Image 1 (cartoon, helix red, strand yellow):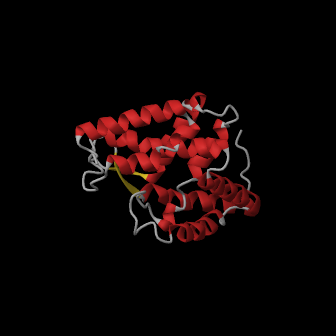
Image 2: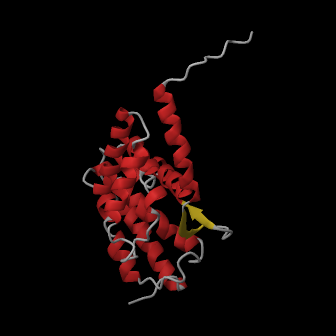
Image 3: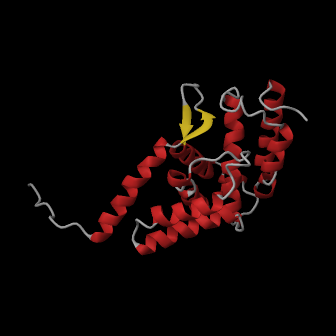
Length: 205
């Protein structure tokens, strides 16, 4: 039996699909880090998927038992969508980080503004919570977001960052907050940082 097709599409669905089509552009925002076979740079959509998966797999390492892995996954899926307009800026790029917050705020308003009002408000609230790191779940999500590039640098042989002349001290200063979210994950991250230094990917002080 062939069911009759519905001929009307709700405004809500139109808005939802407009957003979902727009965020396809995140697949074309490339990061410095390489995929591990070194064939190309990773894109921000891949990064977001990877860190969301980390939240699912590594949730039992959170220092705070109140961390909600599903909420963390939502934050991580959303956290880089603003890069469609604002671009991906390295944590260590002083010039590029000037007015970054303003650029990302404008991007969030435009992109999440494509959604119905209730979903727009939910997404912006999650995005801001992640950025502020004030809740245990947001701190844990941010820790994973900061851990992933360190691991990538090591397993990809430092290819994505060889032209950056990054110092071990710089990396530790930016990443040591991970210990607040998870001492175990910080121990792993710190070990990886030191392995990268030994391999010549970061410069010792």
